[in-house]
Amino acid sequence: MQDHLQGLIAQALNALVDQSTLQKDSVGAIQIERTRDPSHGDFASNIALAMAKKAGLNPRQLADKIIAALPADKALDRCEIAGPGFINFFLSKSASTSVIASILEQGAAFGTNSLGNNQRVQIEFVSANPTGPLHVGHGRGAAVGDSLSRLLQACGYRVDREFYYNDAGAQIDHLARSVQARCEGLDPSCPEWPQDGYRGEYIIDLAKAYQDKAIIQAEDREVAASGDIGDIDAIREFAVAYLRREQDLDLKAFGVEFDCYFLESSLYASGAVDDTVERLRDNGFTYENDGALWLNTEDFGDDKNRVMRKREGGYTYFVPDVAYHLNKWNRGYEVVINEQGADHHSTVTRVRAGLQALKAGIPEGWPEYVLHQMVLVMRNGEEVKLSKRAGSYVTLRDLVDEVGRDATRYFLVARAPSSQLTFDIDLALSQSNENPVYYIQYAHARICSMLNKLANTPSPNVSDAALAVLSEPQEEALIKELDKFPEVVKQAGQQRAPHLIANFLKDLAAAFHTFYNAHKVLVDDATTQEARVALCLATQQVLQNGLDILGVSAPESM
Image (cartoon, rainbow, N blue to C red):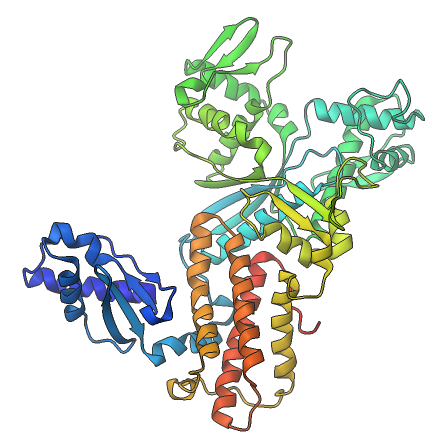
């Protein structure tokens, strides 16, 4: 409807230009917003206020001329001037209820749009080191990244999901030494235990699997344990494969799958890291100082230059990241979104600086980043800090096992990623209106239960005349919420903000429960019943569509 109203105003402004009432260069951008107060209409525009100075007219005078020039349209009941020159639009009854027919006609496609114009976008998320179980922070990244992928698909993008394994570097060596120590019968209390070793119980399981000569089927290879506890390279290879498989199983249980798994080690094996460093050297952006190799990141907005190769040898962590993102660019991804923890904030400027220094035609500000804050897990009013399995943190599997996939996914995506999140286990388990997951899913189940009583009833009449009976305040409020869904999806896609979908669903559920508690659907009057059934069917569909974007189920009974 906003696009439709913008079109009507554009026609009015063109007519005023043709009449020489306005000059063409005085015409500005047209903005339409929903009103908060129903007495102010359904939509409002500040176009007269924005254009008044250039047009040389009082805003209210200009608003009056715009209204007079609006073409006749059945979607409009009337227009009014408010305040200093706002134009308030009151929709006709048929325009207000037409969304019901649109929802029932479009079904699962309702709310989708062509914002992405079929453009390829790669979303990298989770990307955990294969050194242990996924923790709840990784879970938030998985929930946000997967919901964002689903959201952008709904916005007309072709989405590829990618997981980047940091399977090279010091952390992997610490993992291998920890497994070797367990194979030798040591535990973290022993003086010989590796100083930076991993202490969780999963290391015991991993060591036993290695000694039992287990075979691990990873995404891209099969790894058979030799059982030789003196072969640290064999232990390293097996441990990485073992934990990659464990993480993959956790993610699949969470409803998350990837199109591509990319190994950091492949960048070294292929020579891509060395080639990237040479290219930066050739472009004149590196220098040697105090035995280290530096990159002039200050030239690209960083607060100071950064070390690329350490004095003692070995590249710093952002160097393979630059090589990796060059690989993404060379694969043809003009839109790349990295969903990562807020602890990666410092790498954003460095990676972008390195990419600019490559002079490869990569745009400034590429790639995009969505960074999520930490998650605090609470039970009985106290923070939950440890997992029996991991030993030092709460795992994703802990949460899924305790509160279920749906509640975990919703709670982890329900707030803006930039906000710290408190995950209240007690709330997630409660069957009350305070639990947003229960509240939303119950709305869907409530509709299904009601519709089961009408199993053999023909489809309701959704003509303008039939829906005209939906005039109760609770009915009109629910219709308005349904009509917002396409706008919310588009806004969420533009802002890379799937939490907006979660917030919308909570509001929609509230509007439905208010309507349902105020009015019976199954009534004696056939016309009223048909209209209300159509309204419930439309609500059911939009709940399904929104929950699907979040990867949350829409149960038929609860």
